[in-house]
Amino acid sequence: MNQQQQIIDEYQQHQNKKIWLTIILITLIAIAVIWSLLSGSVEISVTNIISVLLGQGSNKLQAIIWNIRLPRILTAVVAGSGLAISGAVMQSMLRNPLGSPYTLGISHAAAFGAAFSIIIFGTGSVHSSSADAVLVNNPYFTSGAAFICAMLTTLIIVAVAKYRNAATETMILTGVALGSLFTAGTTALQYFGSDVEIASIVFWTFGDVGRVVWSELGFMSALVLGGSIYFIYHSWNYNALDSGDETAKSLGVAVDKVRLGGMFVASLLTSLIVSLVGIIGFVGLVAPHIVRKISGGDEKYLLPLSALMGGLLLLVSDTAARTILAPIVLPVGILTSFLGVPLFLYLIIKGRKYW
Amino acid sequence: MKLEIDGVHFNYQSQSVLEDVNFKLDHGEVLALIGPNGSGKSTLLKCINRILKPQVGSILIDGDITTDYHQQEMAKCVGYVPQEESKNFPTSVFETVMMGRKPYINFKAQDEDLEIVAAIIDELGLEDIAQRNINQLSGGQQQKVLVGRALAQQPEVLLLDEPTSNLDLKHQLEILNLIQAQIKDNISSVIALHDLSLAARYSDKIIILKDGKIFAAGGLEVLTPENLEAVYEVEVSVADVGGRKVIIPERPI
Image (cartoon, rainbow over all chains, first blue to last red):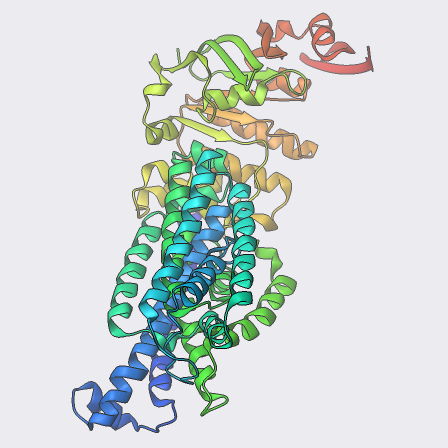
């Protein structure tokens, strides 16, 4: 009996470590938020920031904090969380460490939708909080078109997968094929586009959390929160699925239903995020892998921790993108790719034991 | 009668894999399924477990037809140890055995679940490696973990698909001793086995499958050179060593 109690105690110690990791990540996000609020071309002191947050301070400071910095910061956290938790779920559902919106062609589809809207419907360009290099005609229409194409891809993948009994290879191969198709489509559109239109497309694909307004942020937050609750509720099922379909079935999991549901919600989240902020690479892929390396593969913790890690990564990246070449503001998508690739290679070389 | 297989047919596309399989298994009995590769052993286990759905025939547990069971109820009733399993994102030994409690857990594991898992880990002798990742373990230890997960389901019927195929001699005996010890607790078990001597040593009943049909069924007496030669197309001798049946393959026919 003592022996058994010891086994339970050890297990609970390991669980406690994961709870500590949660607390540490939340603290780091809080610190990053403060750092990010303080960073920018206009220097604002901590006391001024507090007074602005309490509804005081000059109109100029109010505008900088409430209209520029805060929505940008929250967008980074929410979009990063959404991309990371969706990436973690896609990796589990596909039983593949490369599962991400890229593998499934969702990002490419969104880029095609935006390009289509910019060139065919002449919606011009996207709003840029930083460079103002391109005109703002109709960002909503552009995002809407990107979302529709991304969801269309999702529906095709899910439909093909359903036809083939939700086989993971089917989903990945369908995604790769659709990704190539949309890339070709985007290239074809660019061939016919004017210089300004091509610049708009390129700028849209850069991925930039500075273009989201409060109403969009609210909608995105609600969806990311709802999706995360859905995923965490299913974490036992996802754990079982990772042991293979047969084992999962013998543990009482409705395999096809759980897999299609998980893929649909994960794709919905990434579609929405990509359509609002553009393509932000590697957060969805890297964040879950970092968490797995630190705290193991148990989905009950992996999913919420991935969300926190993704939010933290994107916020830190975005703040760095705003400061390293200040006053030039880099689109965060470029930075995450630059940081993500070496980090990912490091994980593959050093840490492959865990998958 | 614990487990009853009644006229099961299973076709994969147009090819018949199982044909009119019938048998009964009583409380606490161990049945060894033997037969060459492709004779339908794994398919039969999967049909019993509802991973595959037979086109004809039914499977009954305690007289109740299993297609009426809710998926969750079925998982509480039947434990399954697959032939092999690869995890992409490995979990610890404790977490893996805990998966066997899934049919009982809504969202949060209760103290009772933790106690059951700890008792199984203790019994399997895995206490020193309970927090290690399963991909860091040897083949024998991994197999024990998978058996542990099936035991955590507290099943009435335990299905094992060649549980000893990748193991060294010591681990083969350990795994089968362990299963035998559990069977006393009123679990009935069906084990697909390649090693005929182990089948003879650990089972109460034997079914020899050939091309998806039952070629012979009964007690140890079905392990005759004639039966085995007809099924495996190998000349065999059956020896008696210290009261145990030992099957020695001689040469292909």
